[in-house]
Image (cartoon, rainbow, N blue to C red; front, side, top):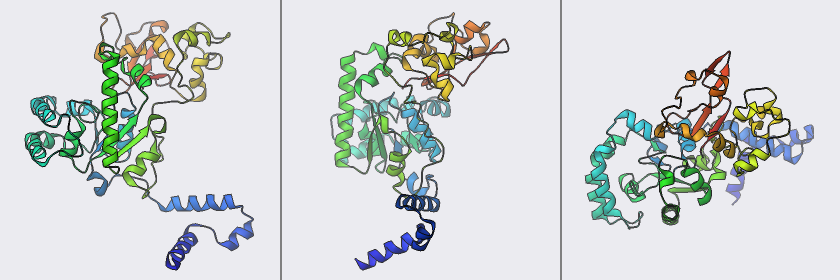
Amino acid sequence: MQGLLFVACIQLSCVGPSVAHVFDEGLSLVQVKAESRASFSQTQTVCHAGPEQLRHKVFVHSLPKAATSSVGRALNLLGYEDCHEDWLRSASPNQYSKHWDDIEAAAKMVHGKNPAGIPQDIQKKVQSLLANFKQDVDRCQSFSDLSIGHASQNFPLALKNILWPEGRYIWINRPFESWYTSFVKQKDGSKIPKQKLHEEYTRLKDEALAFRKEMPDKLLFVEIEEVGWSPIVKFLFDDACTPPQDNFPMFVNQRLKNNMTVAEGTATQGTNCLPICWNSCLNDPSCATDCPYCEGIQDGYDYVPDWRCDMVGAWDWCPWYYTSDNKMKNCGDALSKMECGQTWFDASGGWCDVFSQCVWVDEKCYYGELQKCYNR
């Protein structure tokens, strides 16, 4: 015990101010603690995945529309080469589809079985069957999106755990009703009955919870409101380093996040809000100050409330499901201020998570960065 106390005292003397300094400067206890923490943080390096971390593939094993894209971008900042659906397709168009029959056969082998306890004979069959597939995707260090990252029956947790037994998994828990509202906005989402979606949601969540109970060091279960650097860095790096100085790429502005309906939102426009502001908050300087739904522009938070994104039809501009021939696909095609304000574009590199409104400047329509809708 005395030895431990001695080591502790030596450590404190290295990272904190001396007793004499405390009394000479008249520092309070709170200030002393703050100085100690600041000094300690300066001795730590910024987290960046090295050989030890890269031994473990990281899977954002969560449902789509649960901040998986945000975590994928965070993993990139932490030094992982994150591979999402677009990356896999661009690297090799047939990279996933050419293995589909083998993946489907392997998924049937593990269906209904405990992902943490697949019999050895089945594991060997799966490893042999998917050896070429694993070789194709092993250059990825993390997976945040389809077809491998997301939790699904198509590529179940059991297969991931067999192929990458040292893998790490992140489940982002988003309440069902909130998740469902977001999910049905995407391609084909509304075609699936709500009850069926709820059953699948529950099954995958329960599976993740059971897996964590058996292998607590391998799966991080985090509520969507708590997603940020702290839980992810601690999970992947323990306390060996400090988070990047970059803001966590979470496309959620808590001040603007709300569940208002379109009718309720319209009612809160404000008595001084000009009609042109409804089309675009960028149409007049007064919009930012007079229109509640433009508050983010004024304060530097560029994401606008969900109800307004619904109202202006921002989600309809996903290139995956263009159905109208008369819709413009490029900002430059707009010939008037009104048309420009009604035109949105996918600002998330094909992920259809973030949609940015075009901006009318000097009688021309340009791609904008100031006002965005995020399909969480």
